[in-house]
Image (cartoon, rainbow, N blue to C red; front, side, top):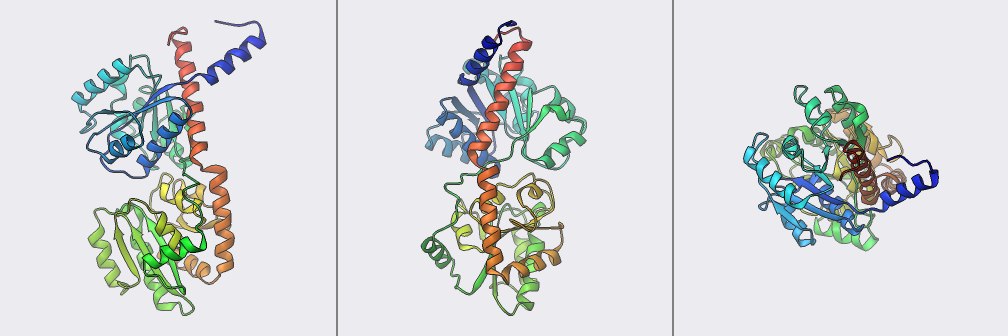
Length: 393
């Protein structure tokens, strides 16, 4: 319906912006990685804003457990693979019963169910978090036709989608968010306690890394760099803590032995809350070979740590080279060692870069900003879908 009165158009627009939405996030993963941090944070932010925000997830997964603990209503589903028709039928039944305004697919397996979710009066949205190019055969259909809106967590991810044939006009960049109140620079006492818990002395320079122990994370180059520094640096003692679990744990342990740094480099295993490690650190490393954006990078940035990050994916958007950290070529241990050496030699430089990192997180990467931008996309997609259906919800 058209309005001749511009005041009426404005009133209708404001009414639409004030309308609460019912939103279901779909995430069937069993683990709780950076993506699940975003899913839970977004759902909580939407609920705090008065929206009906629920999750469709695996009851055996950690997201289910954490969401229920946070008071979020969850609906059970198991999606074994991209062709799990039984899961598709169950998802259709949930959507038919609950009648959400928006269904947001947060992982690849969830997204594979999108074609089966069509026809239930909902707007469908998908988030892409990886910066490698999706399958060119299926991507144009899954992103251009099976959903109404696409979220890319960085410009690098958006570029990879476009390279696979996804219509760039359908993609909205919404950076991941971090809880900047929880992840913040520590007080002197908090820092001392965190370092004490890890057995770190006052004269040691600590660099930390948090992430899955997989080849794409580039930990081997960080280990090689620490080996070089330990043998050459005379003015400071070097320590490195790597938190996470994954398939190359044993390989990394052997590489630590090869560079003779078993006392300097520690693999901490899975850590549910990285805040204490960040508080104990002087620097943060993200030596990834591929990275959509990196929630761990955002948490370190918000905590006021200067970062040494690979020039890949969304990391080049998080770190302002020379201002909030240093960007180095991927798979280059020498560059990591050089950047670390420069930062280790200057407490003043670390302080300046850490303050710039914190300011950048507050300005660009808060959870509130991410939720607000996602909600704006929801509203645009809902409005467009209803217009295409002649105003029928």
